[in-house]
Length: 315
Image 1: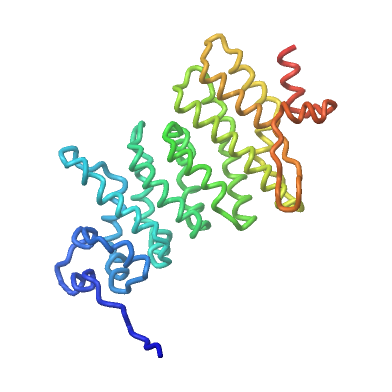
Image 2: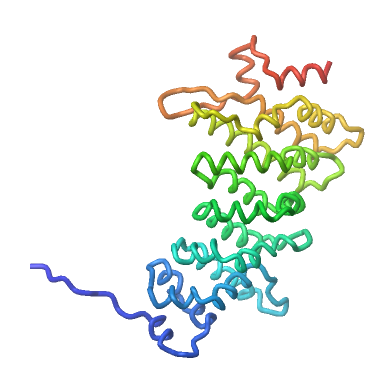
C-alpha cells in the first residue's frame, strides 16, 4: 500500500519573507531563490513584484558593478537578477512589459557609449528578448516610439549580444501581422543599408563581422519564413532590399575598395555567398541548403539576379 505525503517543506526563503525588513539581496543570497521563483512561490513573487524590487533588479543588469569588488562575486547579483527576470513568470513579464518606467530604465543601457560591457549586454539582451517573445505588441510599440533605437543598434552592433537582440526581434515574434509590421518598420529605418555600410574597410573588425553575420542570418531567416508561409500576401521587405542591385553593387565595391582589408572582403563575400544559396526540398519536413558551388554543378544553366550583378561587376 502506498501513502501520499505532502513532502513540500517550507524553504528558508519563506522564513526570510516573514521578516518585515528582509532585503532583496538577502533573498538573492539564497541558493534556491531561482528554483522558488520558477516554482511560483507566491510570497516570493509578490515580493519581487514590488516596484522598488523590480527597479533594483533592472539596475543590477544595466549598471556596472563597483570595480573594487572581488571578481568572484562582482557579477553575482547581475547574473541572479537576469535569471529572475527571465524565469518566464507571467506576473513578472506583465509588469516589465507594461510598466513604461521599467522599460525606460532597461532601455537606458543602450545609451552607454561603446564598447558595452559584454556580460551586462548579454543580460540586457536576454531580458529584452523574453519580453519581445512574451509581450510583442507592447515592446515593439515601445521601441518604435524610441526614434533612436535603430541608431543605437547600429552603434553597438560590434557587441555580439546586441546583434543577437536584433535577430531576436526578427525571430521571436510569431504572429504574422506583428512580425510583418516589424519587418516594414526596420526596412523603413534602412537597417539593411546601414548594416551593409558597416561591412567596409573603414570599420573595425568586430563591427564588420557582426554586421555580415546579421545580414546572412536575415537572408536565411527570411527565406525559411517564405518557405513556411508560402501563401503570404506580403513579401519580406528586408530580403527584397538585400537583393536589390544597389546593395549588391555596394558589397562588390567594398570588396574591391582600394583600402584592402581582409576582414571586410571576407565579410562581404559571406553575404554574397549567402544570397547565392538556394534551399531545395529533400524529403518531407526537411530543407537542404545548397551552397553556390554545389548549385552551380547541379544546375549550370541557372543565373539569378544576384549572380548577374556579380558577373557584370567582375567583367
